[in-house]
Amino acid sequence: MKTELISQAYAVAKERYAEIGIDTEKVLTQLQDFHLSLHCWQADDVHGFEVQAGAMSGGIQSTGDFPGAARNIDELRQDILEAKSLIPGSHRLNLHEIYGDFKGKVVDRDEVTVEYFQSWIDWAKEHNTLLDFNSSSFSHPKSGSLSLANPDKGIRDFWIEHTKRCRDIANAMGEAQGDPCIMNLWVHDGCKDVSVNHALYRNTLKQSLDEIFAKPQPMMKDCIEGKVFGIGLESFTVGSHDFYTAYAAKYDKILTIDTGHYHPTESPADKVSAVLPFVKELMLHVSRPVRWDSDHVTIMDDPTQELFSEIVRAGALDRVHYGLDFFDGSINRIGAYVIGSRSAQKCMLRALLEPQQTISQYELAGEGYKVLALMEEQKAMPWQAVYDEFCLRNNVPVGQAFIAEIDKYVADVTSKR
Image (cartoon, rainbow, N blue to C red):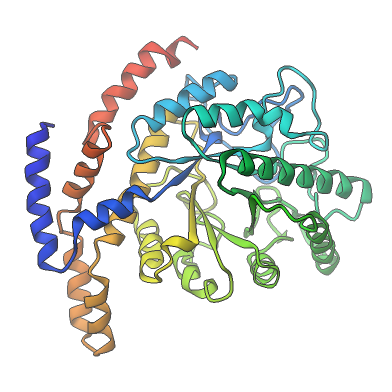
């Protein structure tokens, strides 16, 4: 697309939005400050780099075998940089513990230290990227059905030690980058069939969390993430949404809202205003659940749009962190990165372009039809021209032009793996 056409379309859009009281230059500045935390596991289908790695297990699953997946740490980093070059703005990188630079050494998860992530810290500094982190309780001989909630003290202590060490690593990352590293804690713990020990498991999980969080870590932030169920653990989940919401509110932790972790009839967007009065910050894991927590690539669907709109309407832009959490091995993985990231940005852009104050005043005045009318009119406003201008200013491909760039990368790089 020619630059002059993009600029002309943006000029028209700028005027259209000015008519309804929206300053698109201010919105572009806000969007520039909207930083996604890109998930490293999209590039290799959540395999990681452990020498002793086994089959995926522990309540999750990745499907598909599209050619060209990253096979080692260098290829994964190369793919992430390629994806970032096609996504406007500056973005963080979210690492799972299993993606350490183990250099062919067998390192069990209760032995991991910052040594195995120093090359990530150096790489991130070189590429002006901030890091986030996750403990990894799945796909391990000691995962089973219960980790931190396991009544077996030996198993439980193994995972407590693992998670403590992950917090140490996250804190070291935060110190190195001069910005707190956000560490997410999710464990799959649950039961496949009928269970009568719900209280035992939940009390055990609380005790494990209390021990894990006892050590102050000033340069990292703890997130805790609930779920309805994991694969193979359908009947009962120890770390339910109720459990973690209560824990986060009582102990001042960040609550993670994963868009795939709720019942299909629930709205993750509605959770934002429900929990913000009780927690200081939220973390998002944005994916697209198709009937369940299937982690499809984020698109501009209604649930995603409503989620970002609710954040803006709540005045919570500075209280929410934005991570992606899809892993689709059935399509080009870099294409998935770019589509999902751009879709999330577009949803945030449309939320920022909403004449919220005017619509709110109509609602409070009982002018319901005007609320509905303005909400519907926003769908046809020229927001895409504003996003195209955003891409142009960030020197990344505009519109579908990124497809050709990815095809070239496939021909030059991934097809040769």
